[in-house]
Length: 444
Image 1 (cartoon, helix red, strand yellow):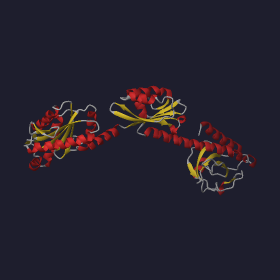
Image 2 (cartoon, rainbow, N blue to C red; image 1 turned 90 degrees about the vertical axis):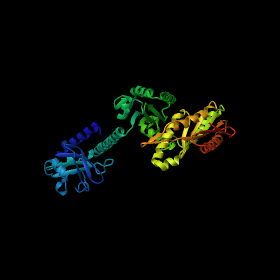
Image 3 (tube, rainbow, N blue to C red; image 1 turned 180 degrees about the horizontal axis):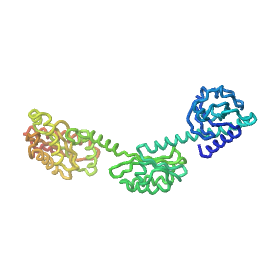
């Protein structure tokens, strides 16, 4: 209810009191269940709630004349407000929106004014109803505003809300922290600078400027973009309020850093061997196709190396599976360290590993295979006080990446490298065998 409406209702009650010589006049808002709260009174009093459902007032057929109060059961709150027992009362029904039993209650401690005076009071019913309706709507609007403000500040996201006229704006605490301004109401024009500065601080500001500059004259556009600020990433969703730019625009800044890290970790877990931490077979097969395809354009050589830990069953039987697991971890690390960063190395299964190498010269591959073998056998592996001599056998195969043959080439290289590995194992282990292009075996 606005101040002017409140003053008007108070003035109306005061007028009715003077005209009728009543000791108390209340403008009462009453819902369909008889629950009442007086909105304003003359003289001015606190406004406790009370119930008129059993008072007899609401059931009476009022004709503009005061009636003996003995025939009614007035709530204690009214008696206390009157500061004495009532002698007569008059109720002028003034139904209002949402409160159909509302009205104007006049109470006298002694004889009422002449009927000629009180008969004029019902003429105020329309004004009372209008003002009480305004009060109720204002109260409801205040509740909605408070709920909105509570939501505006409590959601775990930054919010910038631009009014439909483009003049005013509101910023919550989370957005204020990002923009370096105070939370609360602002001129929309004053936020343009902080918003632009925040975008320019982003690692991907070029991409953002390009995306938003294309929408400068479009007040209906909606977009979601990730704004990357160092280690933090915000998903920024902007769209017209209720789908219409004439209603305003909202910017939502949601910190998705944790979500992205979790997604990255899940991807890592899905593509990594849980024991050794190197890529798993699935990841190897996915990435190898990309590597081979990249080599196809130039017809460059690629190679597969199969690596198998020698006598691994004996290690498990002698020292136990936990020690065997530790041995596999060290073997994987030594092999990974012996390769170039661009080489793809993965656990293929059990004690077997696989590597895919791209080389500008064929003679680079045997040298890389020997580095793997030597890196593992160079010194014993220390596990729980035990020094365990460990070696690996390596089988390799080289092929030329030609357009359209990536999958067939990979399958053929794995098969030939596996044959070479078998020969290395049966020839004494701890050695490298390379399958020649014609599938002949070369002993290194």
